[in-house]
Image (tube, rainbow, N blue to C red; front, top):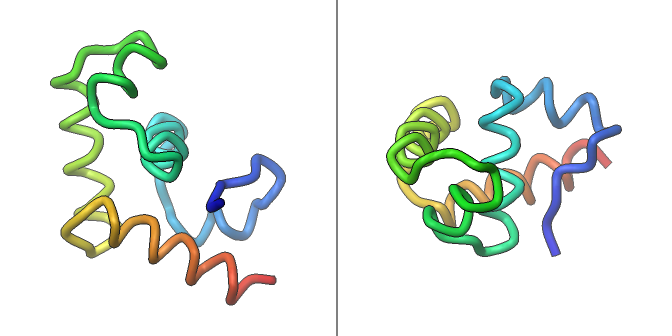
Length: 79
């Protein structure tokens, strides 16, 4: 299972995401959809969608699967 550990500062730095974007990524990594993420974080689905678009752009990828793959790759390189 892929996860972003709070203590993994180098991974957080490598991703260069805002704290809320990291929250979204954590939820994406466990397979939650936008409505589940919104409910969990107490924000609207539209806000989740905006964050996902920003995350995709910052990470230079085009899908949730690619987000997970990139995080996995970064974790492997940093360990």
